[in-house]
Image (cartoon, rainbow over all chains, first blue to last red; front, side, top):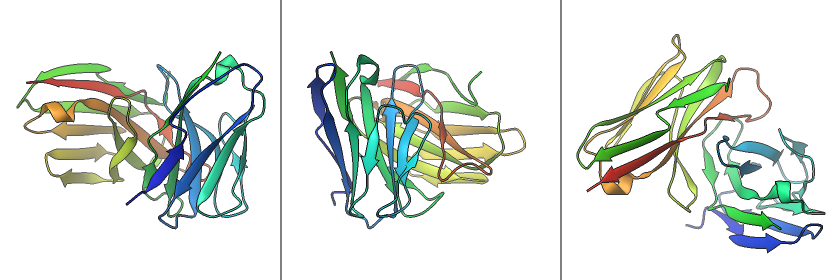
Length: 112
Length: 111
């Protein structure tokens, strides 16, 4: 039972570098989400997708892009990383709107 | 002021104690979630509720919609319960699956 799998688990980037975080789910969920978690703050929604081929902005989308080319995968891209993007990133998926969400193990990203 | 407030922020208990974590919110909601996050680990959904009470093993979650308040109780606490417990609410009429998260309660259960 893989559930929601995020890769990589850890990454250090230099300012200006780009990278892609991969989220894969094997539960045939329609909805997928990317959150960031920062100290002293609740999780904040970056982008989400309500189905294959669709994406939408969340609460803090600036500096990030996403793609959902396949139903099971949701990619989060940082085109030009900034120190303010140092955070722990969580992917989640759910069957539908308002249903239980399943989270991945998180990706700890440090931008120096 | 955050729309979702949790108390306490930190809690230390002795093994076997009964634990209560509180969540208060200021918006009308359609559902409330309790989540568990172990140190360095992922996030696990414990409960999703919109009224009344739910129980799973030693965990009990209650919600009072009129008072905009929810509690998470742990009976016979154990060191493996040590984790951050997060409350999240889904506002009425919010954007798709928009959740507002609390900042979490860090629980340490000592043997």
